Image (cartoon, rainbow, N blue to C red; front, side, top):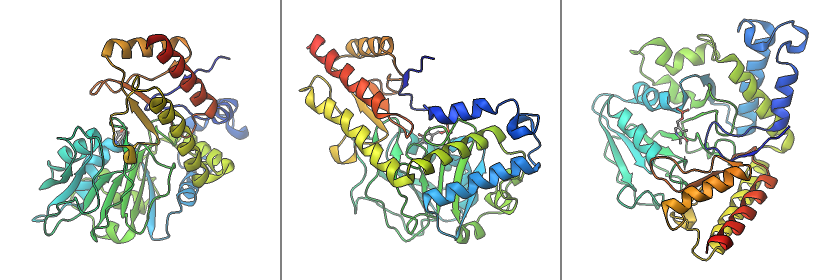
Length: 360
Ligand SMILES: *Cc1c(COP(=O)(O)O)cnc(C)c1O
């Protein structure tokens, strides 16, 4: 077997033990004579899988009792519409921290449902940093503030959480379960599974019951958080295989030491790559503010796009996959999600040093 090192931004690398475990029971799930993906979602074996996944998610994230845990489909992108559809009310604007590509997509979608505005924008500065405390310009009567904890494309993370005294909504897709969430500040948190939690197909959502009780009721059933909460995320057929896989990834994370251990590893992995960038004496360049450097998506540039293409080409030959930056910004991006091993990162930084000395 030849597994390569996969630095893709998503869908991303998964723990080998999880893939092997799923492989071993793929055609006959625990003596039931069929695959978990062929089974009724109302069957006892599947219900046990989903209940365990939801419980583990809440446990590992340290979610307080006054939150509901939901699993939906549609990715974080559906949440860009669903959050405003459920939360926006006539006459009250919704504020967005426009910290990058993903935040601005969330803001653009919210504008279809009401008065949405950027309480701060990093656009003119090339999305190189997150706002400082006191930078936000909030309008009176703002219904909620939306933030993006980690900008997957720009490679910056939020460390200075806004404390605004109104509902705080977070897109945490790309650093889910790699850091603690300040639950005293947040009321609604969402993210697609395919970065840290499993394969694509499931979206994990936490919503405070207070906020859930005040969501809009005049929208279609699937689009209401309350439909899913009242049916334990079985309002319609859930993405059974994605949930099953997420459950396995969460079991793996728990066995490995949980969220604090995931964070410790994320810091260690990203520090190695940032050190390799900084050590290369200008050959590699990080475009983002040092304090806001992402632990998940390390973005860097070389002196020309030709050299970047050569870097990606040679890296691919060396078994390092997925390093091409997002098509909208170019450059190089190494995504270092929870299942990326230190060995993989070591191979990358060795490659970087060798490439730099060859091309300097
Ligand atoms: C990947 C990503 C999204 C989009 O997620 P989908 O699940 O593909 O809809 C949204 N926000 C962030 C921060 C992301 O990284």
